[in-house]
Image (tube, rainbow, N blue to C red; front, side, top):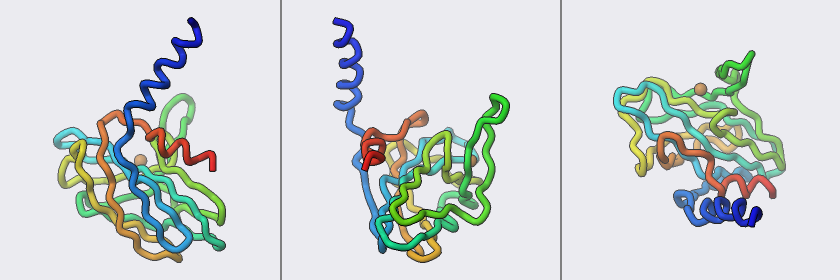
Length: 161
Ligand SMILES: [Cu+2]
């Protein structure tokens, strides 16, 4: 009886499939499921999330990001300092070593779209461009999910690889 109570929510979570994942491969890099969250009208910032895996033999680095729907996109890191959530820009970008997986997710590393020129609406896909030191420019689409959306089950599963 007790066990069933735990199983039910999990089964439900699995049935509610996340928005279809989309991946991009460039050189040895695999970019998994870029996504964002819906913003309120007049909101000035949005977040960008994705997973980057390096299946190649040499290190690469995400150096910058541009999006057409905001004045700029920054690479940020969130942390807790004395019980207060803070974030700062990561200078010089984020390195991805061979065999490494780097997650950009709520509460950790993330992309910050600053100066939104339009609200992001749930269900739409918005373009962006990632610039890597070695792999160069990669065009992606961020799938906009609900305002409070969590990382998808799909993305979490992949961490175990
Ligand atoms: Cu931020």
